Image 1: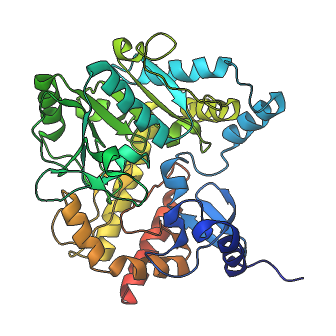
Image 2: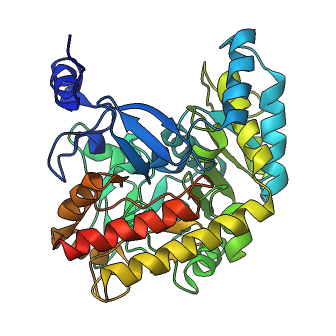
Length: 418
C-alpha cells in the first residue's frame, strides 16, 4: 500500500471539513497549490506526511517560541496527562501560571485563563463594557482580534468609519458599536467609548511597528474620555520581551490579552489587567464569563514549562538572531522589499517604502509577489505562512546554520526570478 500524500489527505479532508482545513489560511487559497500536512516537528523543522522536511517559520503562528517538541514541554505534558486531562475543578498549575504571568507584566494584577485568543479578546471587551457602562469599541484596520461577531468589522483605511460586518453571518447590530480607525493614527475617543483595543505591534497585516507617539497617544485619549485601553498581545505577549509590549514601549494599558506562547503550543489564552476591573468578573461581580476547559491541566503544564525557559537573556539572544536574519533577508531581497524587524519578530513587504498602515500592507499584497516567493521557498525547504499578511516566527531553535540556510534560500529564490 502506497504512502499517503498531501494531495490525498487534502482531498479526503475537503469531504468532511469545510475547505479541508480547520482555519482558513491553511487551505492555501491565497497562494495557490496544495497545503502540506504536517506529520511531526522537532526544533526548527517540520516534516510532512510525504517525508519532506521544512525549515519552519510558521511555528504555530508564534506559539512555539522554543521550537517544536521541546523536551521540557513534552515531559511536562506527558506527566500532566498521566494525572488526568480535565477536571472541571481548580488545579494548582492554574495559580502558578497566573502568578508567573502577572509577575512579568507591570500593571497586570489579576488574570483569568481561557482556551483561545478569541475568548480572551471577547472577554476583555465584555469587562470594559461592564466596567464603564458604555458600548462602543474602537479597533484598527489591519489588526485581528479573533472571530467573535463584534470584532469582525471592516472599515475604510482613510478615515475612521463605523464598522460593517466583515463576514457573512455577522449581523449588522453586532458591529453597530464598533468603530474602525487607521492603525498608527490616534482616533477621537468620545465619552461613549468603552475601550480601544489594539495590537501594540501589528502582526496580522505583516509586521507594522507603532509610530512614535501612537501608543502614548492612545493612552492619553482613553484617559481623557474615561475609556479603557486594551493591548491584544496574543502574538506579542512573552515573545516581544520578558514583560511584553509594556516593557518595550513604556505604555501601560488597563487590560491585556495573551495567548500562543503562554500555552506552550496547546489551546490556552488569558485576559487580565487592573485588580479593580478584574474583580468585577463573576463570581465577585456582575460580569459573567466561564469555560469548562479553561485552565486545562495539560495546557498550564506546557505554559509553565515554556515560561520557565524564557529569561531575559533568551529575548536578547532571539532578538539578536532575528536582527541578523532581517539584515540578511533585506540584502537578499533588494531595495524594493522591506524587511521590518521588531525585537524577535520579522516581516516582509513588497514595497520600497516603510509600511505604517493596513493600506500599505494591502498594496504590498496586491503586487502578487508573495505566492511565488512562498512556493519557491517551499521547494527549497523553507516554510513560511501561506498568506501575505503573516509574519515569520523564528524560534530559539533556529540557530546560525538555520538562519544562514534561510538567507541562502531567499537569495536563490530571488535569483530564480521569484
